[in-house]
Image (cartoon, rainbow, N blue to C red; front, side):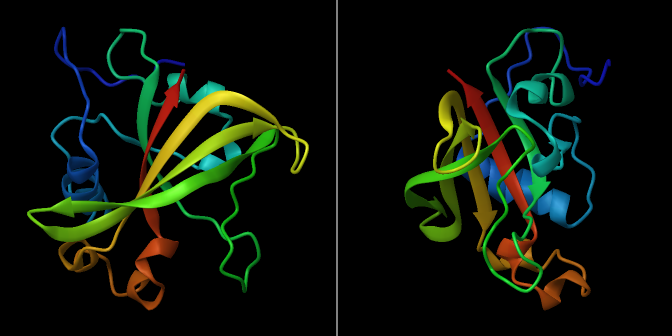
Length: 165
């Protein structure tokens, strides 16, 4: 499956948390075109982390870091808990959420998650780490269509970076 983005030779893509939320996520939420097709939309609950490298490939170079957008999925239709399970395992949050600032203004929060193969509480920890960012920025929220505004932004789209150690 040849789904990689066509980018110039020696192209490197390493956005900061601020750039990922304030530029890329904001454009994605507002359905605006991003100059280079470097961040894919992925349904995280249907994809195993070891399959992300094919879906989120940038150029032809081998990488251990991938970027994508994903909708937050609820565990229960009427609840607030997030579903982080895949067929083979689950993503488990670790540590505290980190605030992301732009020009001294809070624009979002970053959550760090590790992938465990199997089912909780007996899952086996793997070397896959996800940094998931959600926006709290009013500028980003203003780009959301009126249909989506009825739900809180954190229930919508997140920008993610997955790293394989």
